[in-house]
Image (tube, rainbow, N blue to C red):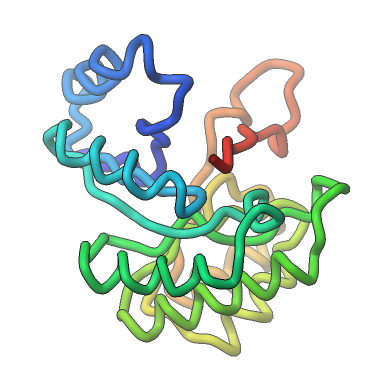
Length: 192
């Protein structure tokens, strides 16, 4: 069985063809699709998607590009959802230092808080990592989580080995296959 570990099926971009995307995934042999949230405002959309589409499972978290709109109280909301809904992972979380109008310290605060929740609930994490691999590894060494996936990985062999040593799998996004497009190109989440 194939597993898509990172599909924002709840996103507005899929409003016109969500049914077709899901059907195509199933037809291609994808038996499980992890739908990660990006902000507390997206938790209900994720839940609705996984309830509607067979084979879909939820992950709840606050994306690093959404932390500027987040409130500290959102962490209590996340805790409640983790406890009540029992998702398969905490995510999508991480650091994105590629985007220049975001606050790195604020991103790290939310990452650390969410890693601690993942450890508390014994859940894997789905990591968004852009231009912050070494910083993420530093936090993962300090706050040990059961395992996880670093998606769209584009680091060095040494960094890859360190993620693997910490129990992580590496994802290689489709962007690396596009002609003339750098591997660091990535979708920007709608934080609402």
